[in-house]
Each structure stands twice: as C-alpha cells, then as structure tokens.
Image (cartoon, rainbow, N blue to C red; front, side, top):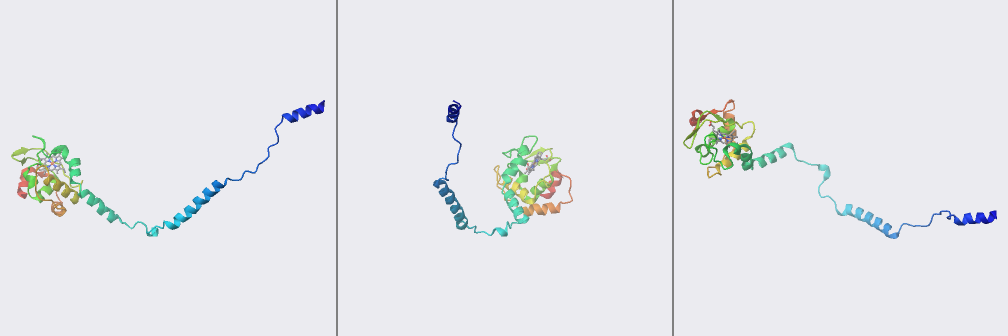
Amino acid sequence: MADQRKQQVRARENPDPEEMNRPVPWIVIALVLGVFIWAVAYIFINQRDDDPTLGDLRTISTLEEKVKSVSSANGAELYAANCAACHQASGAGVPGAFPPLAGSEWVAGQDRVLASILLHGITGSLTVKGTTYHGAMPSFKARFDDNQIAAILTFVRGNFGNAAAKVSPDVVKAEREASKDRSTPWNGDDDLTKFK
Ligand code: HEC
C-alpha cells in the first residue's frame, strides 16, 4: 500500500530539469561576424585625409579677423539694435526729440565729422534740416570699434534715401586718435560747425 502511494506521488512530480543542447543560431553568428568584418574594413576604406596630429592650426588672431569681418558686414543690424530706438527704423527721427538721419546734412556731410558724432555723442542745440534740437546723442566710442562705426555710418549713408559715399574704418580710426583726449560730447552746432 505504501509503495503504491509512493508511486502516485512520484508520478505527480515533474522530471528533474536538465540542460539541453541549444547552440547559438547560425544566423546570429553570421550577423556578428558580418558586422565585425564590415567595421574592420570601414577603418581601412575610410582613411582620414587630414593629419589629426596637426590639430586646429587657427590662432586667436585668425578668429578675431573673422569676428571683425562679420561685424563690419552688419551695419543694418547694428543700426537696428543701437540707433533705431531714437532715430527710428526709417531714419525719419521723432519730431521735436530725435533728428532725422534721412536727408540730414550731417549724414551727407564730411565723413570725419560724422565719425566724430558717433564717437563722442552730442549735447546742446543742433540744427538739422532747418530745425533745432536740444537732445542728447550718446557716445559710442567705447561700445564699437572702428570697423563697426564705419559699417553703421556706411549703412546710414546708403539708406533712408541718402546716397553719400561709404565711410572707411581708417577715417574713424584717425578721428578716434585725433580726439582721444575728449571725454565729453560735442556741444552741438557750436563745436560741430567748426569741423565742417
Ligand atoms: C538715445 C537716443 C539716441 C540714440 C540711441 C542715437 N542717437 Fe543719434 N542723436 C540723438 C539726438 C537727440 C541727436 C541730436 C543731438 C542734439 O540735439 O544735440 C542725435 C544726432 C545724431 C546725428 C546728427 C544729426 C542728424 O540727425 O543727422 C547723427 C548722424 C546721429 N545722431 C546718428 C546716430 C547713429 C548712427 C546712432 C546709432 C549708432 C545714433 N545716432 C543713436 C539721439 C540718439
């Protein structure tokens, strides 16, 4: 009776687990091999043609030149960001407050006078197109280099209906040097008409 019972219990149990022979499928082996061969071949087929040991040979001065040439091309952007708030995007100014750059005799006048206006700014009374203004024009000598001032002035002289010649950075440079001791803005017509 006891034996019969043992047999019943044994019959209910699962067989012991046993490792079966499951090799990696040949397709997976083929894929891994294929990728490996491709990777090695890739290194040999795609040789870099520049020598990485040479590194990046650009110097700070090369990069500075690039920055300058980019900024000097952007007279329109510099104007929009730094002048348009007062002189307006159209260059028409605001009557009674900010004089127009469109058709202004100062814009069309001598480039060195115009450069000086931007370098040092103006206070006092200034006559533009027959109207006298009593505002304050800020100084830009600390904010912009010669290239940038020349770019802005060239933009102003070639837009808003103006058709005056370009302003060269050399003119701005010379004016900056000639007036390097000045720390106050020009006193309107009194100072600037002497220039003309
Ligand atoms: C905060 C306002 C303001 C900003 C910003 C400003 N200006 Fe002026 N600008 C004036 C005022 C005001 C005058 C007249 C000064 C006076 O009445 O004494 C003037 C005068 C001038 C003049 C001579 C008069 C004329 O109308 O032709 C020029 C040129 C000029 N500005 C160009 C510029 C340029 C270019 C910029 C940008 C780089 C600029 N200004 C930024 C307020 C401003």
